[in-house]
Length: 119
Length: 112
Image (tube, rainbow over all chains, first blue to last red; front, side, top):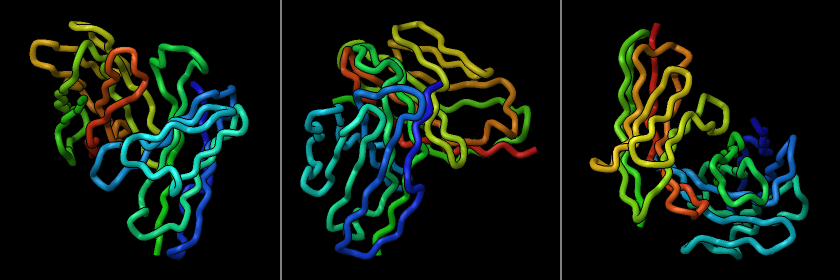
């Protein structure tokens, strides 16, 4: 199956700083990337959908100015948590559909996730 | 809106025991149903899926049947192995919408 990588795997930062998380599709071109957030003992929550070359679509309740998403190439999408605070501490996961650009999206391929801790 | 409720863990079993992880859902229309598995340190992987009522998804000895009458998609395996230790997520995708709605995940630990 497709391989999706994320970097870094874990990051600790001070309150008020910004953190960038990278999500790469390693063996195919991904026109669409999904960004999820996972709280402890909670399900994954879709934050936003990024499409290569256009603005991301954010889910209701997600602050687009706080969680900046860039999808500048077909293999890289980035999530920047701006002015991070302790409540932003979470596990962030990206994924991409198996068939780039197709309408079925029967399967999504997930990255291993990034653990963010804001002190 | 769509929602998925799955059995809360953790679940601890001995090798070769029978596994059931319950999953029920609420959705409009005719959703597709999925089980994803997350092994330690890895991303979520699709384990099996079913796209219409009465379909049975199966993979690696795991099975789940799409039951519309009970809105359920319970995961079963007749004989678990230590290597099955992971977190299992039930999920649904409603209609033609690509968005996945996940359950909270169930941690399974299989002891030798």
